[in-house]
Image 1: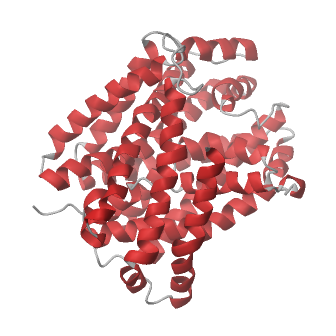
Image 2 (image 1 turned 135 degrees about the vertical axis):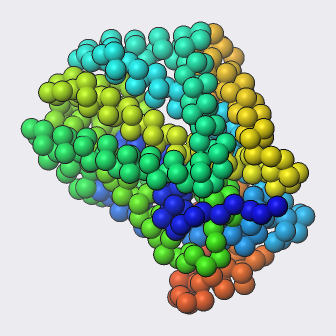
Length: 437
């Protein structure tokens, strides 16, 4: 069976950037930066991204291209049967993440509809808080939007690499950047916006601490989607003649640019109205609408903002779904369309308890966490770091000659990446794992 490939380097870069640019880049990065010293956190975050992060990103994509198959087959074929557990762990992690991530993706659909009908256009934080609580605890509405989000993801992935993922990425990624630029222009021209820019860029060195560095490490690995195997799956479709180093540098740079643009979109607007940029996840659903309500044509900007969130969440969801479906396609030669449909139905079903954990299932706890938070904790705090450690050790100790060959034109980069994968990354990711547990 002939394996699909990206039709162009640009298509691969846009699709891979879409995989890394998710809700974390848009809403998590700004408030985490605000809580950890602004520019000080940003500098440390960028240093980690362009050393450890880019090394693991390179490793995942190189493994995928060398094996020309998904995570399970790649680790088994390149390293032996005993290494395949890393791939299985990645597929399980991706399935769990997509099951609850699609619930959050559904929230962006729910709030886009609320922006369209004007329900979010109020200055009253209590009304906005009540609106959010009533929505996520509703017995069926968030399940409907969860299902719609899974359906949108299905409709992209079911058409394959070139006609589905690549074609959608060439539309969605430019749309994402255009929406961000529209919102940034409006944000930075508000009265007092410079205070927000200064909060984002000025380093507060007093905030530098071991816990802040661990936070930056965790966010860096999360931002580049390394650990589960999404980038490995995308790498498996990459033609051998494509220069890997330049492509990965583009992906990393565009991912970081998106995070910084998200900060420039949110910080000035929030500062202009005296709101708290460190208000956590509620910044998205319970704080930003207040900003929009103060603006001329505020409803237009609210619609743009939640459209932006939907696009960002979709591009990441597509990579997670591809990671999962590539397993039965490669292992058992199943056809893409029935496999994609079956897995999406399973994801929808598994996501229902996660959705209801804010409502009728809220009393069901596991170690003090509801169903949604338990799924999140298992996947992002345990499976994802373990996958990152496994990938780093596999790259640095088992298949290093293969990676070294990819970096033959950059011996200094090769030497640094070798020891990052062998020692530095496993140790630091283990620290994240211990800290999170």
